Image 1 (cartoon, rainbow, N blue to C red):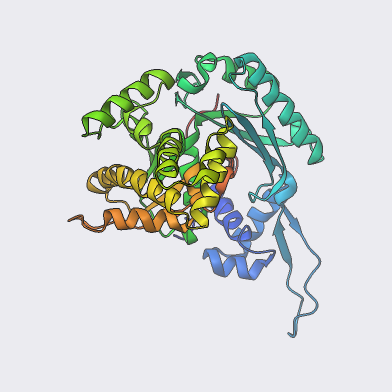
Image 2: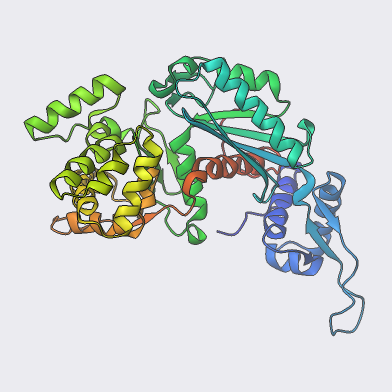
Length: 420
């Protein structure tokens, strides 16, 4: 949709400035005449807005274009200064921290991945996060005052208005306002906290080709299972802000499997569905399958105490078409298809994007899911793998930060959420 334009009041001039910035962000540079034609504004109105934007450091006037084969005065060119500020995208999880600094066009200029020890205390996790932020700023050649916005994703149920974490089973020590308070004390820019999967959904929407899927569900499928829902391009939270917590679905119908899911739920704090289809259960199924198929080599790899190594071995076996691995994949996809059907029946989204550990299985995962969905009356939804891999949350955080800057600093019309 074209950017709205108007003329007259100060608010309308700000809308015009936003429309001009939106055009400038789409090209390396544009002439005043081209901006006038693209926005429908007069050259005088464009000129006034550009002067104000230049004073704010957001645009730069370039040397006139003297190479064009035309008579008369060379065109005055102008460009958006993406380097004028920086945004911070963060993903804080129980096993690692991902931090990235991006310019005002979303181009990442520095990033850092920090591993966390198992069951790291909350204070240690926060200290590691603050250290990682300092590291990426230093690598980017930036300082705190260069940051215009910081968006942070973390597991659990987060109140986006306050940053208060209501429930976070995988990092229980972070429940409350410790993270929000620490970031507010350490950073000089606005800080926004939200659920990691909700941010990943925004990242997936940004990566979707030209945002052609206004209704999109991003499902993170790993040890835990959760979804972020975008309806008509807007994040849907639900009345309790936990819409998309599909890991808590109860779709287990087999008594023996129900007992197993219950035991895993009690042991790891998992929901019924994620205990039934998550990577821990997948590796369990793969070990049984490897034993039944007499694949001793795969069984040895799967018995490692390192979940990362075991899962990598499983993925390698899937890609090598090992029967034991394919049988386990088919069974977990048969189960997961029931969750897909629930999403399809209730929301009927344009697109479902799969991320998380399971996405590492590649297109074989999609093919196996579609086989298990093929006999359903409603028909299978369009399913794709996330292109963002492990950076889905960070990219979503950056997308959110840029969206909020469009609203708050670049005067884009529309509502937004208050930062911490």
